[in-house]
Structure formats: structure tokens, C-alpha cells
Image (cartoon, rainbow, N blue to C red; front, side, top):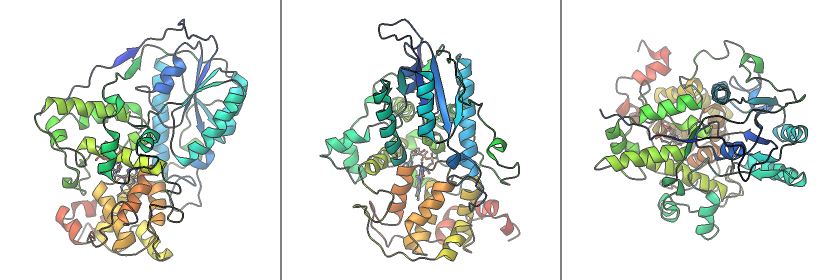
Length: 467
Ligand code: FAD
């Protein structure tokens, strides 16, 4: 097995006295992008600033326990994802501390909290990663308006994705490309393919006086109102940039595996050693830079004689992510059937009992139920496993609305991603992108092909162990 060595990272040395230097402070607002490496917002915030406030705002709706929800978690997110996020914040805090800074955690409605910080700390520069999700699109308009009315410079770079979705839409005459192949043609090579990424720092500016804003350390789950025994089985995937970098290095250490990666050939029932990278939760929270991931893959492809290509290659998977980000950004009401011009209008059934049976892993089909229990326990399943349960809920068997399945995934997945989740649900329900509605995943024989001895099924449905 050949080892992959990660390209040597470039380092940024802080130089407070530069021509652009300002003696006042800056604020870096972390939302996603929970990393130090390849983080242009952090780079800009630290450049030439004497003091820097790294802020994360805990939104109680997203983070605090809601006992009325159908699974442990808040009103918006399952507890696995909340724990993953807290681990990511702890890791970020510890990296910032090593560089002479720290994460300042505040609680409340994010916009209001941010305005208070800007007022109290009188910073001259506000930096945050650009976000295409509708929630942040709306919030960021208010934030930018407020900042410009108070003379605060805003820097909001695109660094969550390889491309700026707006650029691709513009190149395509104002509309997002609706097929992967046309997306590839229009997108070409991302600019990050050839740019050097800032991977580490020697130090960061210290934080300034924080005043009386109620700053705290990263809270524990218990401090957010969760009990110790909230969930019997937790996801095996731990959050954070350190974990993400380790996982990426390990996943791609076998160059032959990367070179021969063909997504449709992976085994969806492999759970002790998943058939894919499981980088999705790290990409979701920005614990890993997709641009760094891309560069690592490019370096491997340069070293090997032959490798697979998009759409099935590993690099092709990153481009699927870009494709859905672009279509989602350019399509009004992308997360709905009604008012969504790319979505077929289908008279789906309403069936709360069937929906609950699917959601709780109680359909009576062991393959489907095991996948749904993996979702409940781990918050992650292989792509083809997601295909099976999404097809079963919608066009395959129950004929229930994709939006209802989407909601369950949105809550429970640790990689839950607005653009990718909605895009794939439309795909699987043949509402958009893909229309071969007669190609159905059998809830029996498809599972038997991959899990002939029932190892996967018995692991997630231990009640069947004796059978
Ligand atoms: P790998 O195969 O190792 O791929 C590497 C990365 O490429 C992934 O981490 C992901 O960022 C990206 N990628 C891979 N497949 C896709 C795809 N089909 N579309 C877009 N990007 C892709 N993925 C999410 O990240 N969040 C979601 O909320 C989500 N919801 C889904 C819902 C349904 C119904 C289906 C069918 C798929 C969904 N996916 C979602 C896509 C895909 O299943 C996961 O990205 C993938 O399984 C994650 O595992 P991995 O990191 O090991 O993937």
C-alpha cells in the first residue's frame, strides 16, 4: 500500500505593521468554516489587525434540547449533529488557543448578538464566510446593511465550495445548469486548482476587551439541556478540524483506492469500514476545506497512471456537491415542490402512520429498517443506502412526499446539507434531474445482493440476531 503524503502546508506569519494595517480590531464570525486551514475570512481578519474577536453564536433553536421533538435533539437538529458541532467548536477553540487567541461563544438570536458585539467592541472589520443557504442569505443582507451604516468593512469570501455558484449561473446566461455534464462543461477547472492555500499560522492577534456580553466557553451537551443517557448509541464519527484532517489523510492514503474509486460499485452495507470517505459531515461544517480536498486528489491523480473520472470518481463526488450548490442557489423555492420550476408537481399521498413507520425503522422490511436505524443511531449512511430508503418512501413503495422524507434526513443526518439534501430528494423521487421512475430499488433483493448473510441488518436490528 502506498502512503499519501499531504502537501507541505504554506504558513502565514502575522505581520501587524503592514501598509494595510489598522490599529483597530476585527471580528471573525464562524458559522460553517469551522477550521483554521484554508480559511480566507480568518486570514483577512487576522491580517494587520492588532486585536481579533473570533465569535460563534449558539442559536438556542438550533442547539438547545426540545423534548417534544420525535428524536433526541433540538427543534431543528438531532443530538448526534449537535454533539458533532460542539466537538468541532471545542477543536477550533483549542487550535485558536495554541495560536494565542480563543473562541468567544455567545448565545441568542445570531443577528442580534452580532450587532451587540459590533456595537460593544467597535471593530472596524467584520469577516465571515459567504453562505448560499437561504437562512444566511437573508441574515447576511441585514448584517451587511448594519455594518455599512456603522462604517464597518465587511469581507465575506466564497470558501465553502470550489466555485462561486453565482459565477457559474452567470456563465450559463443567468440560469443554473440542470445536468451534471453541462455543469462540468460550464464550470471548467476551479481557480483553487492552482492557488496556494494558507494552511497554518504561527500566531493570531490576541482578543481585545470583551466587555459584558456574556462570553462563555464552548458548552457541554449537559449545559445545553441534554441528559447523559440521551441516546443509547452515538455516531462513531467525531467532529472537528483535527479529526477531519486525520480522516482525509487516512482515507486517501491508499492511492490505488483513490485512483480506482467508482461510486456505484461501493458496498452500502459496509459499516465497520465504510466504502466511501465519510468526509461529508466535515464538509458540511467546513471542518475540512473542499479546496484542500480537491488539491489532495489532484496530487494523487498526477502520481498515478490511470484514474477514474467524474461522475463516478472521488473528485467527481466533490463536483456533485458543487452541482447541487449551484442549482440550489439559482432555483427559487428549491426546497419545495410548489413554486419550484424544476420540480415535477406530483399528487403524493398523506399517510402519517406509514411515514412514522419508515422514520422509526418499523416498515417490516429489514433492509429498509436497518438503514433507517443507522440514520437514527449514526446520522450517516452510504449513498446507495440513502437511495434505497428515499426511493422506498417516495416513488418506489409508499408514495409519500419527498419533502417529508427530506425533513427526517435534515434533522437526523450529521452531514445534513440544505442544497445537497433537497437536490438528492428531488432526484430520488424523480421530481427533478432524474426521471427513470420505473427503475426501483427492491427493498428485498437489493439488500440481499450486498448483505447476503445479514451482517449489516443484524448489527442495526439486533432483534433479528437469532434469525
Ligand atoms: P464520498 O463518496 O466519499 O464523497 C465525498 C464527498 O462528495 C461527500 O462527502 C460529499 O460532500 C460529496 N458527495 C458525494 N456524493 C454526493 C451527492 N450525491 N451529492 C452531492 N454531494 C455528494 N450528502 C450530504 O453531504 N448532505 C446531505 O444532507 C445529503 N442528503 C442526501 C439525501 C439523499 C436522499 C441522498 C440519496 C443523498 C444525500 N447526500 C447528502 C449525498 C451523499 O449520499 C453523501 O454526500 C455521501 O453519502 C456522504 O458520504 P461520503 O462523505 O463518504 O461520500
